Image (cartoon, rainbow, N blue to C red; front, side):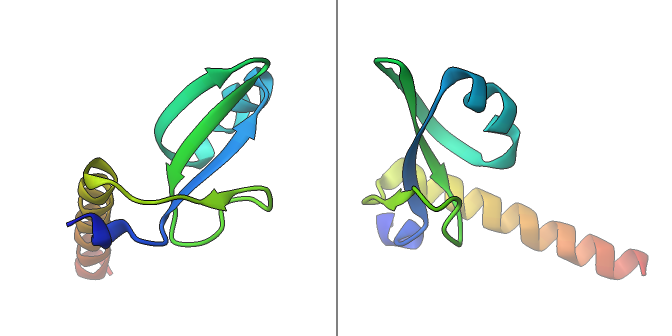
Length: 83
């Protein structure tokens, strides 16, 4: 199942101030303090920022990606009905 999130899991570092400002811009699945920075792990179809690196997806990542995909599909169906 982890392959569902293959090439969709990214990590990058932010300062605590950057994290507070930018955390709403990403689907963050994990974050951890590392010295003066915060390591952020997020899910994204595309490169979320230039300094992000792809990391191996695990089962939790795949589950969250699947839920996000289902939610997005439902939203698309609702907006098609409203139009």
